[in-house]
Image (cartoon, rainbow, N blue to C red; front, side):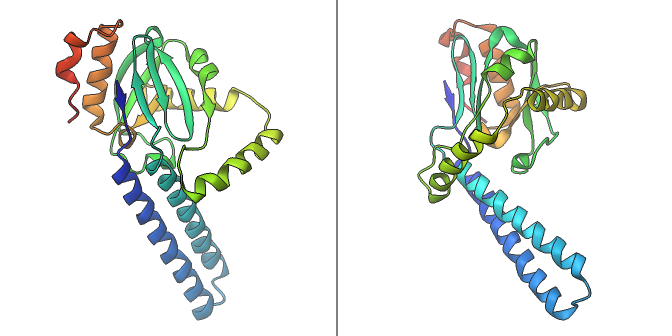
Length: 215
């Protein structure tokens, strides 16, 4: 089974970020002309505009990634979340629930997240890989060579990801948080669906068919 992103919502979030970013640039320019002494405020407004524009690009890439989503099979969950991919085996899942905690900016488009508490976080980290969304847009084409260049100077280390998982666990009781907008349905229903698959690890579709329709 394959759950895809809520692509329209991701694109709307991207457009909102771009609009707010443009307003920040306009306001920053107006401040520099009206009150040159407010240098710090002008710089802060401009930096906020840059962050919002970059965030808009990130959401637009996610909103055009046709290969992204969450795949259920007899072995576990394959999480292809646009900027990363990872695998969680059924036997590595301690419990599944819902959380409203937002651990990074890409969760601002979601009211709730599906939380997964892991039995073995190391196995998850070993399967984790960063990627550029499979998008036909010019943004993705420009980012791919940049990502290849950055990889040459990147020293592989599991510590940042392990620290992020530990922080999530301390704040929510879950290691992995999957934004609701990445699931194409309500977080509560997807959590219930995952638990249904866990109860039938060999993928008995007759027992889980009633849970497949997303809210």
